[in-house]
Amino acid sequence: MAYYSLVASLPSLSIGDEPPFTTEEYVENASQWVTERETEILRKVLLQDPDIAPCPLCKEIYDLESQIRNAVARQRGQKLGVDFKEYLQPHDGFVGEIEAFVKNAFAQNDPVELEQHLDRGRWSLAEELVGQNPFGFEKVLAYGIQLKIVERWNRMDVSVGKENIEAVITANTEKEETTEAEA
Image (cartoon, rainbow, N blue to C red; front, side, top):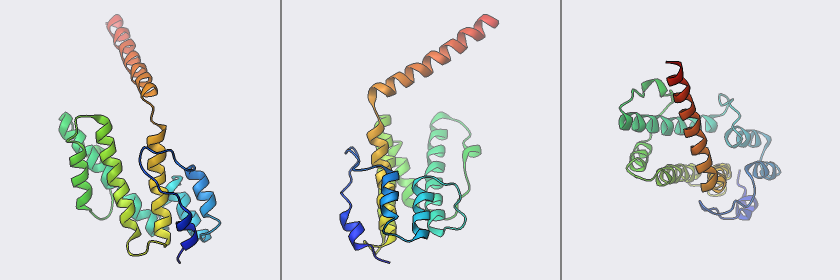
């Protein structure tokens, strides 16, 4: 089914911009246009309902994300000299593009650039879901995935990040001091 009005009404998205609405609001609004089954798929994929079995499109997205996470685990494991195999998750299919963009992401020295490369790869995969039907349900779903990426980057705050890092360092330092005092 084509959703011309819905797709045409969606504002453009770009990483780093303010999201026009939340993912929850998007799903709620889209549910007025799409079928009940498609609303269920939006909820499963965008709001992270773990039940993916009855939904082939959900399974496809799950498999893509699993391959991304596995590629990240391999890259981090190789970089740190750690056995990464225990962190790998099973998935169906294989997309060579994923391995390439994850490898390119890990070539970055700046952690922010690394994350940007990973999310640009996810963005591109979402666009590929659309295929030859730019007004179909796949476009509605791809837009939601891209909205989640925009929301993620909009929530990032340098000062909050520094506070979180300092809290981790402080907690680890306190653990070391406690361990040394006990020894």
